[in-house]
Length: 332
Image 1 (cartoon, rainbow, N blue to C red):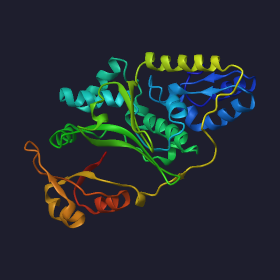
Image 2: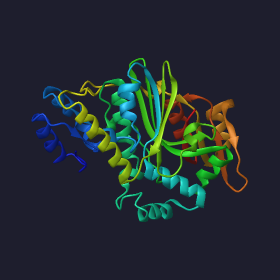
Image 3: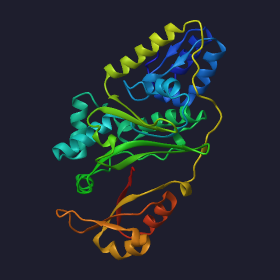
């Protein structure tokens, strides 16, 4: 098994093993995202397997589910909480009323966050996992560099107050839509209605909601941070590989580039914060679909929900809004 992380020497070691007909089980999401298709092709050529369940979702067997249990389904969307560190931080910020820096320090002390946590808190870890999932469901290569990514470092207690007022939770989500042969993917903090199943996922847990053409919604939940969850997934792959020692276990990764959706084709609602003086401009820009959001304790701000609109139209209008203080997408 390969759990060292990074590109090299992990790639060279893995290739040498596969070229000798030795199956490799990996937890290395960076390597899988960048070189996974090449490693799978090498494994196929040498009648062995390259497996990487532990690279996405910690202890949740989501890759096996997509490959086996849902192989007959057309996967239309995947939405997931894919990083246990950021989910723990957001959970504790709300529960304790603490700021981001204080909770990050607490997460590091408990071993839920690395001493250099940038890959987690800036969203890159979730982005790589989202790219792997998008590649598997489309059978085409989706690069992490093609996925717009926003982390959680700018989130404040005020944002959480607004989420509470709207009966929503604030979560870092990897969101994928797969329609008409095209992929739309994004990693960002989303406002999620409290009745949505992902809203109930707290602490270091991960969860993935898959929507397919026949089964509709299926949900997968489990520990996403910590060495035990990763080790469990790696060992499961090792057992699976040993059960198929004389054959290649196919994996739906290829070098063919996926077609990515344009921002004009992606529609959703948005929550916006702006200066109090921006109310008239907001009404003019966003029209009658605008719904004001008020929180008694928050002064000198104008906050609102938009109607359903394309990502590109929203970004154009938000950039034209004077005094914008930030926005979040709404997960429906």
